[in-house]
Length: 401
Image (cartoon, rainbow, N blue to C red):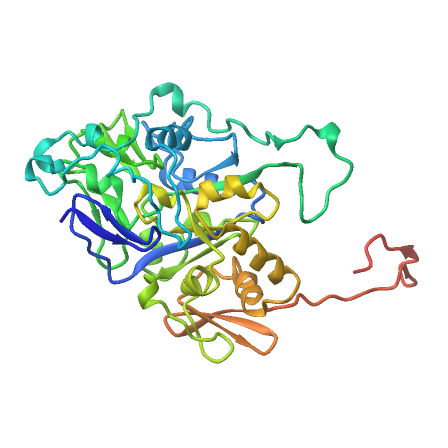
């Protein structure tokens, strides 16, 4: 098959393989308004998975400062330049080329199939990072965009003349993964049970086409072992119902792990009346979280809540249409106008379990994994006010709440 249905682009897209969605799709939501770039997630992944020979340059999880940071260097800019400016129609349909469409390859022709031609690097938009590209994981850290600091009289919630934000990145475990679509062996596959994309290192023959084809550059070549390696979604934990390492160790509590459905199958129940799928709720019902560079055409399954203080034109390039509405929804949540969303976001990081459902129970949010309650938090954090002067200790308090 040469075409598959991509709901993020609102149309069919070209891909070398027939579409086959998994039984359940591993997915995540990252709230960029809360990321502080502490890199705890990076270290959790590094010390668990990428601490051996040949993995020194590998960060299966990394945190970049946008708009100027990138690891490897220019991973997104270089691919965007090759694709050209893609337009979005008013109805949300993407009218530009994806990475599998940019070279006008006839994927219906068997001779062009990656397993036959072994030339996917010529047929897919992308580039091969060189050794220098991997040397600067902190490139552009904390560099601001916008006007100069001298131009600032004040900040307010609506407009920030200067801005940057942190973008944590892992493998997106794409529905139509470029790494799998380019491997001539094939040594890369998508698990039927949860959609996690894996590399069979025993089968890998070091063609390195996955390293070039993946636009997110999350398939990385190990020179010492002569194999490509990548994030495995911590499936050894998620099979037991637990969240991945980078999720569990996130200090900012920005990460939500679960499973997502395509829009036509999305759970649309009301969390105030019965449990609902949290990923479907945030992505499909509230349209708050957006995919990263959906125009690449791979249907990535890590979704981002856009930062509310960054330039919306840049955010639209990064996450596609609907960014301004998402920002309005997030602000409404912060103002107490979206209690269901507020409750779900309070559940983020409150449990080591993945959430397959949640509901609102009075003034509490309750999280479930396959029917079992695994987390319960107040929607509004309780506060207590103490006297400024402590008579028992005969001291004044600096913090009374």
